[in-house]
Length: 451
Ligand code: FAD
Image 1: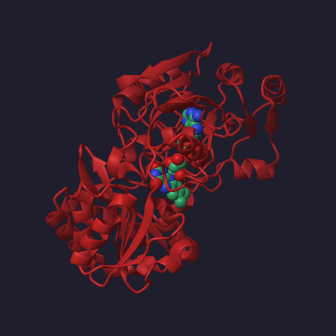
Image 2: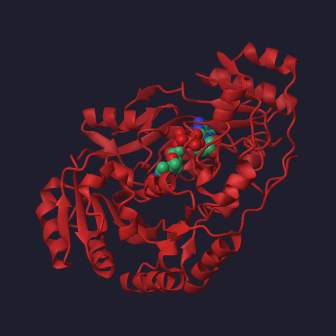
Image 3: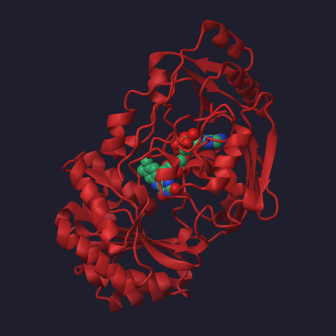
């Protein structure tokens, strides 16, 4: 299950190439601090990726602001066979934006315009921050259908190309669910770069492809009706009761919510940004709930011997999804994590979790998120794990396999090994068309062989 390292040939950029590049791009940085900063993301969540990616560096950071600039850069890079790795805000946690073969990092932060607000949605450039989008949508009585817990830092393009789901997914499913993205404009890395618009099933070609088969320049995203969500935290002395309560809340369609998270007690104390809204000695449920349904949610929590602790926690989502792990890692680098899918049956999911706890004890700390997947609310998990050594983590993978627990492996930068759309053949076919020389984020799509 471990990450397979792909050898990628790095080529030094010539002065002539950089001089030509300067004609097309408004800003190019080649100083060591910039190269270091823009060659990294949050891959350090994984001890395996830390070993493999720490020394990878781009040779130039190229800022672009228009499709014309991107096309010109890609034309030149194609001609000289220089690697180009797109980058939003660099918050991916599998090394998606780390340039394995040097070359150019294409900094898309400045390409951040909202183009229009069509049909209850938004058409925007990739560099726009998700938090900006959410705020502007709310001003129009709309809101994002889903966002990662990095909403304050991450870009729309990075979420589309490198993320998968998050807060809101309990209602709207995951990004790749049909309808959650309406179109993508993508520029190819061909001799003469083309602008291609992907719609319907074709969106799958470039969604969550780590920028390996085109540079996304515009995204048409549907929004949903704004709700002024109420944060709610609850404490439970009994983990099983907390888990069963979360399932009951998850399956209660009448209790409208945007987020539903379970944290096993030792994880609670690490959640610094919201600690005063939690009971650190107890297991916790964290919710964003429709104010209309607050009393029903409270009643249900009390039925499972839970106690509401706070209904005022600001930024509660920053203790969920991969942020839960972040606060633990900030305190203790000997932890890491996994991404698991438990049985859709509440009883069975509990049995799977207790089997893992029986085997690994407090080296396996439960963190669950409830998500609508394939039309039904399901329990996904981002357990925080004590990292002892390579074999121990492998043993955790194996135990999941034996118990029928699915894994999306976060310890690999290889697209096909990550679990999400793993081995999606349409992405490979699109890469053969859109990036025949394999200059886009090389080394991330392992089945691709350059022509
Ligand atoms: P980047 O890291 O810059 O890029 C991500 C990938 O997209 C890279 O492969 C890059 O090459 C590619 N890319 C970027 N822009 C383009 C473009 N215009 N065209 C083509 N390719 C492009 N993810 C989730 O899905 N849900 C979560 O809840 C979540 N929580 C997180 C919490 C923490 C603390 C951390 C560290 C990460 C989390 N992530 C989560 C992962 C990540 O933050 C999100 O996926 C985020 O949306 C990535 O955006 P970014 O702008 O930082 O992308």
